[in-house]
Image (tube, rainbow, N blue to C red; front, side):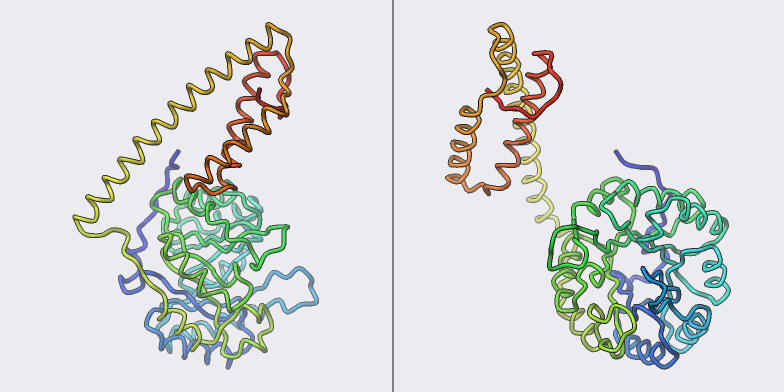
Length: 369
């Protein structure tokens, strides 16, 4: 299902040379010299069009550096005047928006910690009514596409049509090389629900380590994302916040130069061949659905037979045989074991649900007979 949004295409409010969009700058504005020096070097990279910097830093503990506040907005105004770069800052309160507008900030962004709270997002949306300014919305900390979508809807309903979603990864309890798990399927699902919404990637917050940024940036562009937000600091090792994930402007230039920007579509011959392949997939999907439907009808017959003969649903040996046989068959035709196992488990779960329904039992995960 697609949601109704009024979104102005990014190409209509940013120059064509800014696509894919590259936003860069330090995690935090620390002092005048650090901000201006970083901006001057970033301005030499043609692809960088927007300078980012944290002015108000929401920290877990109040003893940590929480930003320079309004003083930093003065530095950003100077950055824009000297370099011509657009500027963007994170806002979390109504007063932040008012101050940012006062100092001529070009783009606002709403951070992950704010997006998790609909009350906070609604407060920001109310302040932005009647204001013509682009707003970027980062995904919430947890993998909840509805929460992300809701924040975008609130802003759009307040008249913000220049919207960008920012994919910065999600908290994941298991150990990973990433600071935040990419979970690419979630921004892809958001794009499916809101086709006209530009999505950019924040590799810095996904990676948490500068050595991983190149690969994640390339992956984002390969998935058709509209740009990147990468943190850059004149001297990352002494940064007051997120030192490990920031790169120097020189390193950023190297990352950008090594990226491959692929076209969303090809020439007529390419498109014709691609469409033929897609039609084949559509046909096969229809056949798969038909086969699954016929399989479930047989499952229903099994359920009726068990009910009439007072036989239990639980048949462990049968289920073990199915898994062993199907995985061996899948291996012979080149299907990945984990993929096939998950697919079998999903089909099995639905088969059991149908049998339990016929038997008049509560839903439980038992075994197909």
